[in-house]
Image (cartoon, rainbow, N blue to C red; front, side, top):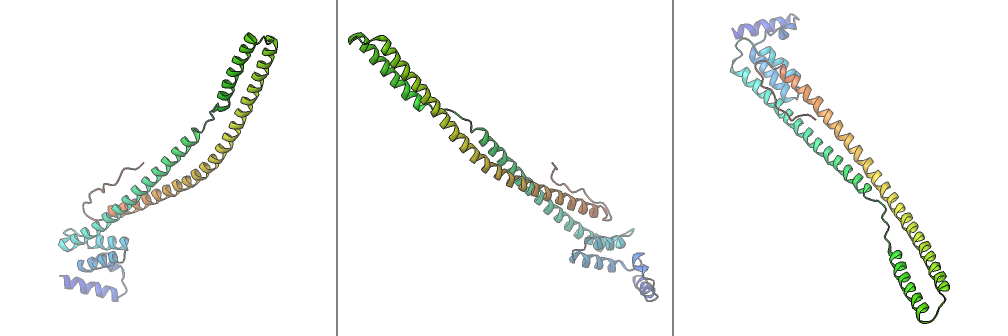
Length: 231
């Protein structure tokens, strides 16, 4: 019967009836060989089409083996895509975490006055106050003169502390601006990294959908591929 089918198919081809192949009139072995040849050439669509033509009411062991080979190839490609998507998600999450750390670093750069001059002025003021009281008590210094001297020292100390506070704030703002520029540049690079990884994730999902569509075209029962969860 197989020989007769082969002869009929050959006769149809010689007569110019090329649809003999599409109609499945060739022997199964021909379609199986064509399917595996297409698979070796990475032409999955042709491999599946040829396998569909070979799959009949009783496909036989040869056809079922060819189906399993194609199914294994599809599953291997799906696993590769799943791994690529998982890696892209991991790198995207890392970049997002680095952006969070950089923003926290910038938020923590708040101005805090370090009162070094204030402590010096306070110590000097206590010394001046003690010496003025001693002069008034033991040496008869005019209290008004002592008060004016103490007031002048206090005004000078306040001015000194004010100037020191402004100097520290200006220095802090300059440092914060420098760090802010560095953070902004790093965040821009990381956001570009995130966009690139998201593109890779979308590309992997599109490729997975194409492979699943091909997998669904396989004749016979096909178990569902268990890929990673999408997010």
